[in-house]
Length: 130
Image (cartoon, rainbow, N blue to C red; front, side, top):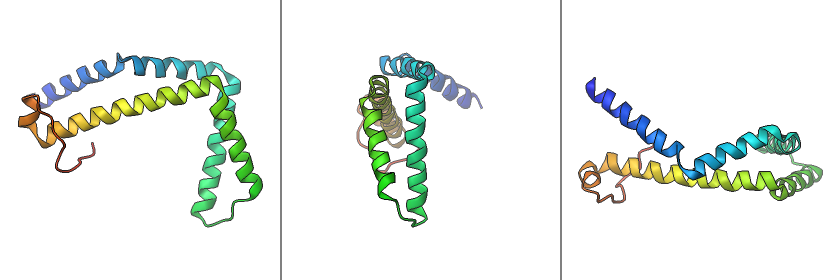
């Protein structure tokens, strides 16, 4: 049980380190701005809803109409051109890349604890998803 406490304490420290990264701070700030920008939020919600509808149609083998495809393209372009959404998407990609690297480092430590403690993190033999 003492091992669990140490592990969880270190995990909290890792979470704090991650939370203090510039990419995370920027993502949080842009997310707050999105909540305040009704137009951008509405545009993003419309796009997400339409994409979900189209995915469900595709999964159930229903045809997707040309008008639906055109609306999806139009909304996608509007999202991509909106300054706040463009920044938010870029920030989200940075966040996801950071988390991917963190996950790889954790996996390397799990698979090769001796090498990780010696500072020689190598590619893991197999991927363990946490």
